[in-house]
Length: 263
Length: 320
Image (tube, rainbow over all chains, first blue to last red):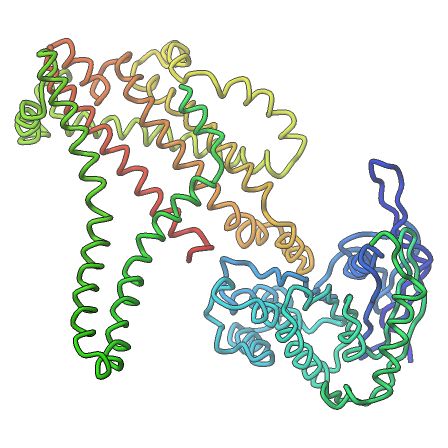
């Protein structure tokens, strides 16, 4: 199988007041079609930096990133991003927020009724159809993140990039959104790269977990394949020794091999 | 001008506090309905505690009265205090007309506010309207120049660094200092007065718009980048709505300052206008008319401010 996304020898340095700071070094990663990959590591290790590179929001200092064999030269709707803090525009209703994306991607080819149907379908998929005419400040944080996910899916991207999508939510809301995302991923077969610092979330959602070493000059330390059958049920997995083993090896990496001294 | 200069640097926090005040007003009915729902609960207890319902209802009526009193009595006290002090001063000095005499004079003035006996003798209505017109025109030009300039300053660091020293230098200057320049350039009094309004209105508009553009959250701009929205769409869908509340704060501060300045400018330029009218009545030694004018200026200023606060509330996405 050919990889959808290829990351080759990527290095990212930033010029700061204290001189050059190397955030990422020697990153090599392939992401295959339909695969869910999570990036995990201690805070400040450059997970989000790598995701921004994939999104095209920043360019690497060295190395290449390819999507569909084309170089990632800038942001594009084919690589949709779900931001940590939902980033819905507060002056637009949920419907309008999703429409903004749908219109941009399909507006030239399709009629208005078709576009509207796409928006509704995307909102229904995350069970937010009832809130289509609500403004973001009228709905809860979890609901906002659902709409953010709907917006990203509505664009029918080649790959979905998620930057700690549930990081700002409480544990219960997070769990229900994780289950929902798992359902949506099963339905759509989407390719996902997700940044997280939640080990359970990583194991529950991913096909592979990419573990980054501590920065500066972070690189990929280990990659763990999660061989748990899908669909995955949170309650059943809790007693599954394979789940426990995956969890244990990620914890092992994070807290034995990469324990952060200062933090 | 100290007060004006202070106002210029005022950030939208002022709008926020203003909104909070408006919201508090809106909240009140909710409080009273919440209070109304109490009797329903009280009825359940009523069987156990006879008479409790009655006293509760009386308490609620008292509460309603209390809310009303809290909203009305302090302002009334303030007004009474002001009028009392005024009457006292009028009584002691003899030269200043008291509230009664002023009220009578106002009655006569407002019986026919729109008469016109030539350019130097017109009703108070015409005077207020022509002042408002000057403010409107001067302010309109200031908005046309100031808002786009604010966008440029906010968007491009170079522009901001280039123009910041110029603005810092010119902003503290009293707009009246620009009046002679206006007279020199325009050769007539009327556009010169409008010119001073333009000058004093433009600073808050530039600065607030620029601040608004600088504070557009990076997340919103990232959304635009990920969607690869065309620049025109970024402008209409993201930048403009995000900056609008700041812009409206700028507009509100501008109008407030403009209304302060127009009175002074018209005193110097003459013509028809409330400022000129005040000066004219001073020359006629009709002091009660000057006091009427002070009230009129205050009320018009208050109305302008409230109108713009309403507008800001309408367009503020947080409270919508």
